[in-house]
Amino acid sequence: MNIIISATSMTPIYEQLQTQITGLIASGSLAAGEALPSVRAMARELRISALTVKKAYDLLEQEGLVQTVHGKGTYVTGLSSEMLAEQQRREIESELEKVVQKAKNYGLTPEELKGILALLLEE
Image (cartoon, rainbow, N blue to C red; front, side):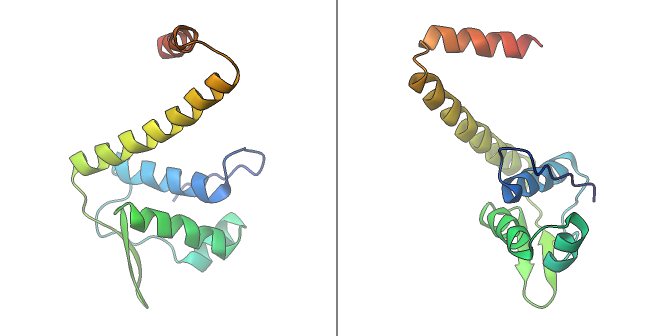
């Protein structure tokens, strides 16, 4: 599993891990029934705290992307593509809410924000 963690990112490490595993599931790189590395193995591989990995795995389980079987491991669930797409839309919506709030705090008008988004979408 190719996970890259940035210690300099403003995004918390558990969110980076959660997002990357979600992406691997969405792309089909992690298939239904496939086991994730154990919490300790993942922590050792990424050189991060086991508690951080556990938090990411717990969030993935809350989203229904993985299931933990105590004593056995954590496995990718067999979600439909529609459920996965909905989960991804919710995640994007959540991020956009943060951006909209920041834009309001900076005094940007809705038109200015739409303009910025339009420019970014062109790239």
